[in-house]
Length: 210
Image (cartoon, rainbow, N blue to C red; front, side):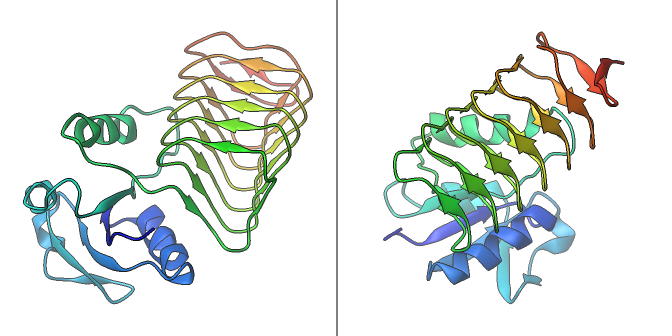
């Protein structure tokens, strides 16, 4: 990343991203957040410089944005922020933590984030604005849709497809060849052994619709 970065959001996910960006040697211009009470404070010594209007004061070709909003379930907010700034011409940085293992032929969409200790094997494709969180493991030939979140410690075995906007909870396991639809939530610790349609919440071992 040759341009300085602005991180969107000042919560826990943003904090982890700031740490990752520092490890990559990225120049972080600042953090923006909608909460005015945070303005003027710092996060890991990086200043919180305002809200979205601060970003809009920067020319689109002068900064890269980093989406600092995480998710704990299928949610539109992270996607909406990404699409809003994209529609204005801004570009998002793709962030891969220095300790992550990503096969050379993996395709990472714009704004994808691969966090510490994650493993992504050969043949995988990640859509834009996705998160593969801490120590998640994605085996060969998986396809992760845009705006999806693979939470810490989750395991996707080979040839799994995850639809856009879907949230795979912490420690969940999806066996090989499974198809999971769009905007689903797979609860933490679930064991997915059957295909899942769109807009479904599943939990348990084996996972069942709630």
